Structures are given as C-alpha cells and as structure tokens.
Image 1 (cartoon, helix red, strand yellow):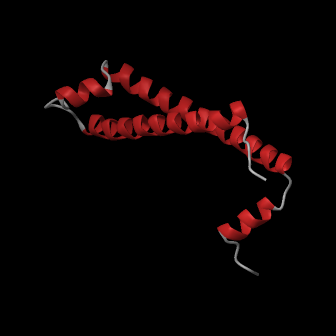
Image 2: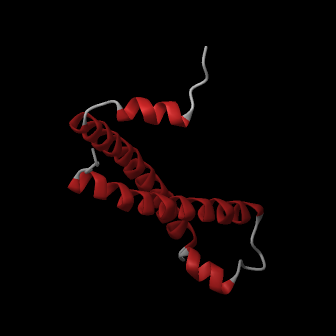
Length: 110
C-alpha cells in the first residue's frame, strides 16, 4: 500500500472541479465549525462552574493569587480552569477563522 502524503491528497483534490472543491471545503468548514461551537459551549460551561464555585473570575484569582489555605481540590480546579480558559480562547479564534469560509464561501483560482 502506498503511503498517503499531503502532496498526493492535494493533487487529488485539485483534480476536482472548482465547484466541487468549494462545496467540499465549505461543508467541511461548516462541520468543523459545529464541533468547535460545541467545544466552546463546554469550555464556557466549565469556566462558569468554576466562577460560581469560587465566586471569582480566573483573572481575579490570577491577580490575588490562590488563598493561603487553598486545598488540593482548589489547586486541581485552578489547573483545569486554566485549561478550559485556553480551550475557549482557541475555539473562539478557530471559529472566527472558519466563519469567513462558511459566510463568504471559498474562491479558488482555476
């Protein structure tokens, strides 16, 4: 079996007609956008959970530092809070990039 490389995938893709390439990319972007929106929703839900649990935003905790009496659970939550905050930021950036493709379509040179 011949290994598939990026170049052979791109070559095969470019053999398709312009309209078919546009449809594939536009539909793929829409599908990916749906998954990213779900991930963003999950990340925002986790962030809201931590904010409600501790009565502060992550930014406030960053400014003030963890309390002296912070237990193991709070340290763990703090790490996960950072993870979900970063996940939300990354999802938002990717959503903005993909929205351009789904909103305006993709125009390829022939």
